View 1 (cartoon, rainbow, N blue to C red):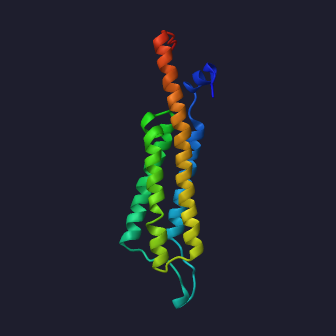
View 2: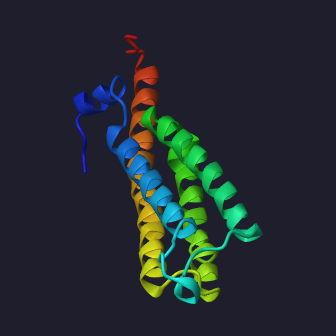
View 3: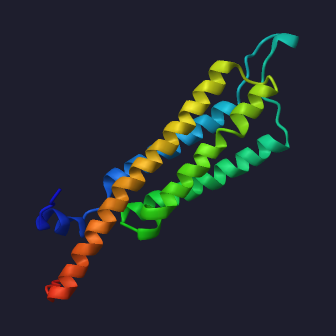
Length: 163
């Protein structure tokens, strides 16, 4: 697929808004999944009540969720300005971590009997969608970074740098 030089030249002055939007949607889904998992309470009476009981592992998940939220927001800001590392590597690393989170708290809380199957399934779907959004953003951003870098090399080689 050939992209016109005008479109590529516009990339020099416009941000990567689609990559940014996908990463921010990923942050939102990840936060929703975390809050769903750590605050679940069926509000039942006595022994019928199902709720998440805070323990060390839940605390670690909260700390990890905060760090990942901050790192993913940083990635969104870096991707917006075509940063090579975050577009080509960082988003895929974050997607892998989000995918691995599925095997931590959703399954742990379910095995402990703190959440029902519907909440486990919902949070797993949210974490999978979060990882998928990061992968899609990574592919789009990596493609744009490569196209822009090649164009900039061509400009420098031809001596047409008008900036």
